[in-house]
Every structure is written in C-alpha cells, then in structure tokens.
Image 1: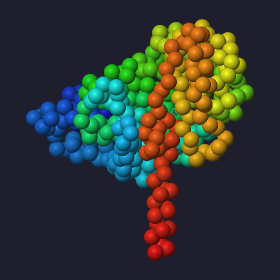
Image 2: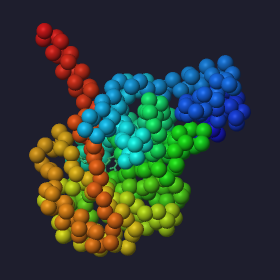
Image 3: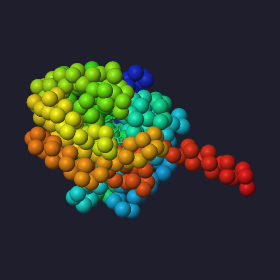
Image 4: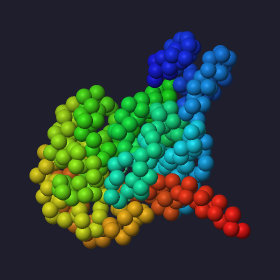
Length: 352
Ligand code: SAH
C-alpha cells in the first residue's frame, strides 16, 4: 500500500516520503482524506507524476443502470486500453449501507457451463489500481456507506491472485478504502494451489468456494476447471485454510433443476465436507444466453427439500438473493452486452 505506492514512484525516479505516499493513496481512494489533502496539498511535481501513473489505470463510467425492483446498480467501465469491465452496487438490509461486487478480470477463462462471463473468454487481468479505482468510482457517487466488497463479478479472482490481494489490501487500508478486511470476500471456482497460498499467507478476507456439485463427474461437467483440481484436493486445501485461518468457508451452490439438488449430492457433501465448518449459500440460477434451455431454475419444492436436507447435516444454509435481474446485474450475468449493442446500433444507423 503506501509502501508500494512509494516503491512504484521510486521506480519512476520520484522519491516520496512515507507520509506523502500515504497522502497519494488517500487522494485517490478516500474522499475524507481528499478533503484533508486540500489543507496539505501534494507537491506539484509529485502530483503530476502520480497523475501520469494513475492515468494508466484510469476508468470511465460508461453506463450505470439501476434495477427499480431492488436498487441494484450495474456499472460499466471503460479502461484506458478500451477494455470493458463491470461492477455492481448492492444495497444491504440496513438503509444507506452497500456492498460492491467487483470484477477481477476482463472476461474469464474458467468456462463454467451456466455462466455468462464464460462466453467472453479471458481478455486480460485487471490491475490492483483498476480494481481499487472501480471501487472508488462507485463509492464516490454513493450517498451512504460502502461496507464491503465481494469479488464475484467477471473473472476468477484467484487466477489474478497478486493484483486481487493488492487491491483487497488497498480497500481495507486506513489510508485507502477503509473497509474491514473481513468484509472483503474472495469467491473462487476452487483453484487449489491459490487456496493453499491464501491459507499460508493467513489472509483475513472471507473465502467463498463455488462448489455447485460434490460429485466429481458432475462437477467436471459444470465447472471444467474441476478436471484439473479434483474434489479430494480441494477438500485438503480447505482443511489447511481452516487450520490456518480458523474461518468458516462459505460454499456457493447454484441450484440447477434436476441436476444438483438430490439426495446423492447431500450424501456426497456429507462424505467429503462433513468435517469442515461450512456455511452454504444457495443461489437461484439466472438464465443467460450461454447454453440456453440446458439448465433451469430449481422448482420451489425441490429447493426447499434440498435446503432442509443440508440443514439436517448441520450446515447453516441461506438462500442468496441474486438481484439486479432486469439490468443483467445478477449472479453470473455479468458479460457486457455493450459491445454487442453498439454493433447493433451502428448497423441500424447504416440501414437508415
Ligand atoms: N470465478 C469466481 C467468481 C465469479 S462467479 C467463482 O466462480 O466463484 C460468482 C458466482 O456466480 C459463483 O458462485 C458462480 O457459481 C455464480 N454464477 C455463475 N453463473 C451463474 C448464473 N447463471 N446464475 C447464478 N449464479 C451464477
């Protein structure tokens, strides 16, 4: 954080004192600190150099779309190189409190069978600065308090480990985003070596593993990356994580009708994960253009029976609200339709 800012500036031939580095960070990420900074402005040369460096990570808010039903707001950003990424501002139960769902990559390489982002493929990683600036852009126009961040937007956060951890550190730094480190959630499809690293480094953030099936063959079909990291290895990595960090692991489970809600899944979960301290989040499938008609939302009775069976196993289970549906801001729906739309608009303009 401030040390890294100082090192980065140093690498560009600009020497900064520790207090200046802290003010640079605060200037970009904390409105409160920006007000203070007016009283103690940064030196002109330093300011110009910093502006040049941050310019590389510049983003422009291209669109913001509010879902009138639940107040979810989807943001579309354009980065300095033209890449597009998305984030969502999510209202919490307490009025005036929000959390932000952030992207870690432009597109994604994981190819999950039901996820819209998978259709984009991986374009590139986001830098820590780009992630932090996306957070700051949303927070700056929020009337209220942003209390947390979840890496559940586009991309696989653990496939961009260093930048995501740096961004998380900046977001939780007192001179940066000033949110509680434990209110930052990292959601992964289950990259085993990176979960081990996360555990070994004793990271304070919450870990969410998108399990979605506890039966190896089925999981490989739904989440192809599971072919590389078998469930047994995932379990031992989670054991190591709980040993090191003593945190409950949240398991995300997208409910697919007739696919992953039966007693076979309950039995497999018990056999493999019964000894771990888990919290299970059940997510309703959002229909995306990917594999249309192949997967459907679980029926109400099916969902309730699965929820009851998991509760009986002793796991706390909640149904996660996946909002922002009309604005394509819900779970698994972040795949910019902007390029597609502008192509269509251009075609329509030509035909007039
Ligand atoms: N790659 C990370 C984070 C991004 S996906 C991960 O896999 O966890 C965030 C969450 O959205 C995951 O739990 C994923 O399983 C879920 N998801 C993906 N597509 C979805 C869809 N169409 N409907 C509902 N949830 C979906």
